[in-house]
Image 1 (tube, rainbow, N blue to C red):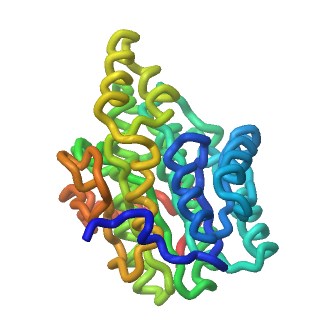
Image 2: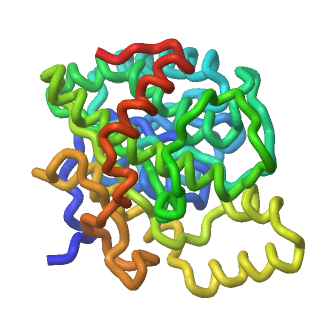
Length: 313
């Protein structure tokens, strides 16, 4: 039986965090699905203006929606720590604990840029920031007795030919925006699978999942990927995605399934069921062999702890 949003159970009394809930994007529709089912959702993002716009639209679409907003810049380790503190405080004020964290925010194939921590922007935003945020929120997630963590990956992880290892401040060779993006998405899966192994070993009542949206026509193309292409190619690329891709609303379905489907096996990876996983109803899908490499995952984990200064339980 195919999963649909009607399969989302009653989430009344549940507290969730969704990062990157930009109006019209995948995170927005993830948040909408959760609040429509009764959850209280903390919207976490860089721009207060965008958070306000998303909250206003969600309240219009779902009257009575229970929402909070927290500033969160995943590209800055200091900002992530501040954001995690604000999320924990908002969760407590709303009657805690935390039941769900959806690591949705990210950037795609942006031009080469370094963060305030001298990290690559894509690796910081897509992996190191979420790694730190997740670790800082493990305690409130565990307090729920049924915590879930969903991290948004991508089909692009399959084109990464080596594990995302090495000193993260190093600049080696010519910068490849798409190459680094695929590495960051591979990191999302390595993180998810290693996280689940460690959660089980620590005996924490939390399950980790990953999801990917397929080929979804989102703002990421215009905000990042298109800027690294020659103008005509960028226009063709955007037109192709609009013509063949699924909507951001449909792109949110895999994450919603991972976040809410009862009895889902931990470490499951959810994506669209259509041709080449480009679209369609969500189902469990396969990750690349490299993404399932436990040695690569452990090496990335050690690097991530060193980079963020956080050691998990």
